[in-house]
Length: 201
Length: 251
Ligand SMILES: Cc1cc2nc3c(=O)[nH]c(=O)nc-3n(C[C@H](O)[C@H](O)[C@H](O)COP(=O)(O)OP(=O)(O)OC[C@H]3O[C@@H](n4cnc5c(N)ncnc54)[C@H](O)[C@@H]3O)c2cc1C
Image (cartoon, rainbow over all chains, first blue to last red; front, side, top):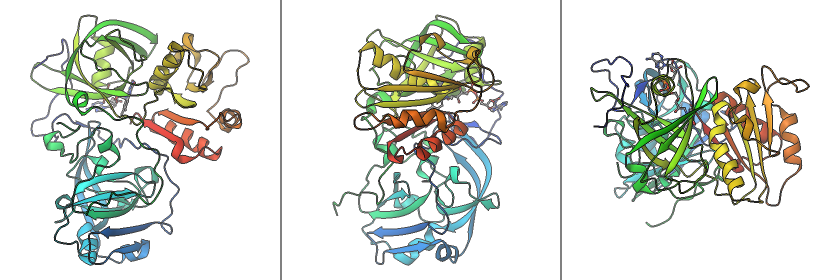
């Protein structure tokens, strides 16, 4: 351990619920995205799931909203070290979309892509079983554009760069294919509890 | 199935360079050799990093401080210095009120102290000096852009480079003495005699986009999220293609 002279840090809370290396951003919700925030209205938003599925399909705003609603209440963690406790997102569980398109037995991974063209890869197992959402509400309000509104992917058990903003679709694959940040040195999976920040972690 | 996935929309620009997974994953010890005050709220820290693998202008690193009980805090910082072979790099930190890491640098740190760094990380905001670059920053957002300006100068590059930098006042303008003809400062609270005071506006961006260099500008925007939103919108409204705008948001 390389102790830094004179560094004490903030008072620590035991069992704080913070993954290693993270700090509590409190009321702040920092924004990190590499591209220009798009002007995307709900009327223009679509969400498509294709690739290794029985029935590829595209949903528009109203069709997606007709699926059974689902809420995520819990914490989120960003690789830049902030975490946010007790957030509440509203939307639809990804399971609801996947049960319509029916992935093939050979499917193992997905690439999520956004209306800006941002991409990120995920193991299918991280997207199923009630662990991922298409979210359009934050704290009971429409999701703000700079946070990915009108709708974003939400995979709260992984670092937040996996939760693609302005989500446009999922391509289901039988292999892993690095997305934007993953090609830029970030970890393929991004589990905050194992501090999977950069590839090689 | 071996089909390679291509997103249906043009992306906001691919990464400029590949990042070495090796350097991105390893913490190295860095020794502070000098601390220089830039403005009342910002200081530059010079670090000796003997095993530094080198970087490109615009890249950042992860920095870690560790307390005696093992508690560690890590933050991202852009690299201010141009790539060179001195075995040193420089960072410039704003003193954030109540800030855990920047607070330590501004109140405790002194030459000889050791911290840990890991990087460089992210090739997305990097500028190897190959394309005309239009740089727009505010506050400490000028740090990675200054690395580009310094690189441009050190190599006498003739690829066009312009810097628009916003600061509250001349006293708050980081690296004020180093700017040359490539730079236009914008002051939001107070300015020298005869210089207008106000937010960065279309009028600052328009002349730069009117004089498009060969191949067009690659735009690099850096600062707080509020500033990044504002500046990137100005660029889009002035006609800069969205896929030629790279944004680094400090949070
Ligand atoms: C890619 C990237 C590059 C960056 N480059 C630079 C750079 O070149 N220069 C630079 O100066 N910054 C840079 N930053 C920002 C930097 O990473 C830090 O966010 C910044 O230095 C603040 O860190 P800190 O530990 O000092 O403050 P933090 O401790 O993180 O605090 C941030 C704010 O939250 C408040 N706060 C948070 N938690 C608490 C608490 N428990 N109690 C009281 N107050 C609290 C603080 O008062 C403060 O206002 C960069 C960020 C990114 C993402």
